[in-house]
Image (tube, rainbow, N blue to C red):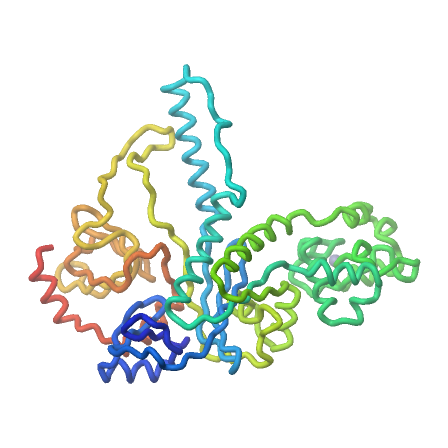
Length: 451
Ligand SMILES: [Zn+2]
């Protein structure tokens, strides 16, 4: 289990504590639960001069998932870890759907109006909404974690590979063999360039060897442009033939074309770098090659949060990760402003009220329902979907439970634009031993309230 974050009564973040310590604070009545995700306690006293250890917030931004780790540099202890799943594709799809509805409405209703489509100006730091959402997700969690624990510095993986080291390798030819880290940069570059597969037979998921397109034996160099990746059988079969002689002239052509996609990924990383700099904290950057090197040196498996913990040159030589369970965070957004839903032909079929909150609940709240009567007797916990009628649906780990009355529901965590998954719920069950919900008292209370 991860450490428990602690605030004093004035919301000053203190050092995170061991779960056992947190349990004692709760049972002795010295603290209360402030937030479920990430699990945070608030003390009932103010500690304005209690010393805190500055922690390092480490980020490994990805296009689908971003790894987050909070590390104590002095001890090497990972105190908190999370994996944020972004909704870039969902935003892309939603904007396409909106575009189609607007286009169709324009065709039907305003087709005499002159077209005015080129009348917008984009700000200099504009990013497409799907990318902007990824940036916003990361910055939201940086801000939240800064409020909950004493963050003193940030580390960010900035690029996949260091072009400077790569240049060295290209110029001096053998530099990548002499410097371990540089070798990793070259390897990362090649993996990206050749799509993480054998260039000759296309096999994936096997160890790949760096291969000279024009072999060393035939005077080929170790320049990056002469390197590709091959599986062991292909590398042996090719022997001292060139790629062209081996029957792959396309490889020889592709070797000359530079990498294009990496720039798109790197663009958001740079935007994130500039915005992290605006927080005023010192921002350290590291390359993906270094992250991988750090992780391999410490014998850690590949996950997003462990990658985050290994970002940058500041990584402690020993990382304590035992029993750390990352919080699985998925971005869900805050609903939409569409007042009129349409069918797939753009025909209006449903209308919404101006209200989002019904009987004290909002779609996206995480609730626990203790149903005591009727066909659905049981305990359900999960994200709620609200209706004006007060009959809610709850998405539990076992599936969707329909028609649960609002009066059985107790809010655990109010909607904050994210939802929290499996390992968190398991963690939640551990935590419930600490904070027993008095179900009987709660049911009595909610029965009395006008539901
Ligand atoms: Zn092969």
